Length: 452
Image (cartoon, rainbow, N blue to C red; front, side, top):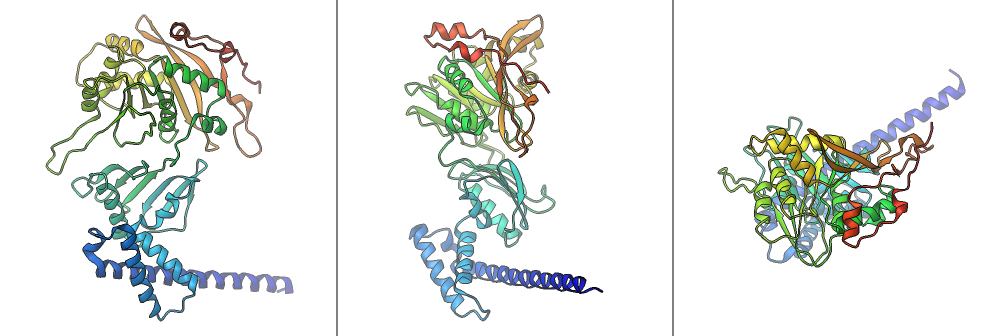
């Protein structure tokens, strides 16, 4: 064996040895954190839930106990090591465990715990595995129970799936045994503490300034708008931005499964659905809330998402004087939105003729804004489509704007394309003009697609 080969082998052996030492030390740290975690739980017990001194008093009490325990620890620990253990144990007991760090990271948009040992996060639209982990299944279950109990929900073997939210409005979904075969699963979709405004979406490339001005005019002009797209495409974020255009002197009612919208107008009434209790009673559905909202003298109704029989009630509200409503729907394209709406109307239990359903849809919906999460991780509006009416038995659609995919991809893998006007002036411009809302002719100036 040559000298260079022996040197390379020596370097590799040293690197492997260092990795083994680091792994062993990490495992010892994990054991210490687990030991002190359960020591605190055993010592304080019910005081963790019923503490008269508040969160800060409890934190101070736990920290004092931890420092006392660490002072008699036989394993050699540096000052930073001890502080790291104290912080982690405090997060595990008072916060949300290993995901606490990511909840405070503004660059993380989604947190996914597939089981206690595997936690992934989404940054910039891409998913990355982290080195954080829960102590064990019991720890993850305790964090899940802590989250859902804060909003009056429950999760157990009889009800092993739940949707909830964190105090900051972040959306939470949890699945446990017997549905989750590999251990409890927790998914948190974060929302910014400071809600995105339209300028943020323009900066991200989600929308252009001209299109933003058009959407603002459509909201002010009381058009009924549906935001469509797949999971995680930014529908709720865009709905939040559209809701910010609502006039401050109108009575606005928001209806959601888990309250996520962050409206800053003064006259806003927020309604949230409720699941059945342990006896199977007391369920309040989105459909119930939509019906009730009509009796609350609304100027505007904003439904977080239509996904069932409430679609019929929503369409009827739009067709009976409650125009200017906003909502979202899961769909692959604007044309698919119509098919989904027809299907969801059938879920109401009424056997309506297909033509009658389509007439309701075409009369109610004015505009469909479609979002897509592209391969580069960015969320973009790819189509803005006007619902023009009926031709025979078919609802006619007309694209006003389309995303130009033919502009290609740059060296960093990001799409160069943007939303371009098809040059067609929508029918609703006359309605907006009648209300005194003027649109610049430049908004609808034709922009040819790039040639490959």
